[in-house]
Amino acid sequence: MKLYLVQHGEACAKEVDPERPLTDQGQRDVERVAGFLKQTDITVHRILHSGKMRAQQTAECLAQAIASKIELEINGLINPNDNPRAFDWQSECSNRDTLIVSHLPFLSKLISHLVVEDENEVIIAYTPGSVVCLELIEDAYWQINWMIRPEMLG
Image (cartoon, rainbow, N blue to C red):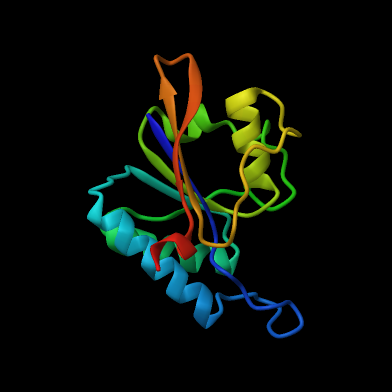
């Protein structure tokens, strides 16, 4: 099983737009990442997002590239300051490759919780639009397979 953990693209400041949609740069970055994922033939069976506009826009763009027939799901336990231990990925993902679009610090803490069992141990340096691929090995432990950032794609 693989988890693709995506930080939403760059969003407008709250003072500019309280809904915080993606900026033009954020949209371009997410489109580049979507194009990359499409070229790698990644498939997912579920796509979850927090319901915040910036996460929804990111999820929609990625879904269009790699999973256009999948209905996006909103999950209320993956917001910026949510506890990663409260998000039960096993029941949510049911051993199916899943893409999750969320926020910091939640994503960083979730990865640390799954990989080193210490949510406060920072092991990933996200930038907006980044994707981290985790894989569950022998139903026993998680490992980081790879990470891609928009700026790596040119």
